[in-house]
Image 1 (tube, one colour):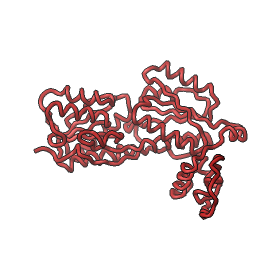
Image 2: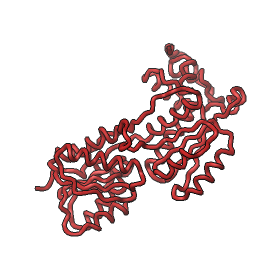
Image 3: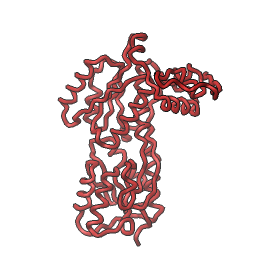
Image 4: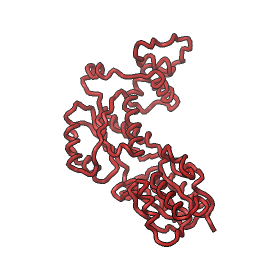
Length: 348
């Protein structure tokens, strides 16, 4: 049971010359220091409003746990090795940022190692290298089948969690992006009168790409729309551009759903060069809501994906293993529909 204490508004200001302690954080947040300690250990039974106050206090006071002192006291490391790839891409970058913040708030330091996912030998070498360090655990952030297989076969010798989007075809519970986000996006197009749609998908080696294809096809069928097929790209703007430029004859679809915003950017340029107006002739949508999406010409209708939450959930799952707790596996990938000017009524 958590104990909230009234915040003392007359508490004198903190001495800027010394680092903040959990007692300072507790006073700032108006909670007990036990509540702050439980939050830093990853305890889940804290009320959302209390959790928000503690997070704000940690940020405002720039709280930094003394990892060296804690390690000496507890006799165990507070460093986590994080393995990831394509850190220059929006999704992996945001996931790593969310994981790093969650680890720091829990009193751990996240060491991020970027892998070349096309080189299995390099992956194995990186795994061997990271295991030479004194780690509390390993967080493996995977997007491709090959990386997931390498991680699952690895002997980490410490608690580990492989964070990979589950392939919906294997059963279980589909993510929120598949069950809520894409149906909302496709339903938006149906509401505008679109009946003929096309999907530009990511690489088939990504479970996320396969999940988005299935969710798109299911949503289109549910809305009574006619899918004119799926073209595969590689998440890059160039691949979206090439997919549209490679179509022979006139464009007969009235809407195109791209698997991410970068491919949507390439689609927009290709359609424009082929003489089509957006959204007057063809509506275009993306997924992710990258910072530049609002400044495309025209601004892009897309699904905003909360990658930071995905990173936080991954860290919480790893910490549960480190601290011998059991958490339910989460399939959540929160998303929300962002409507901008790249979509409009279907051309008749």
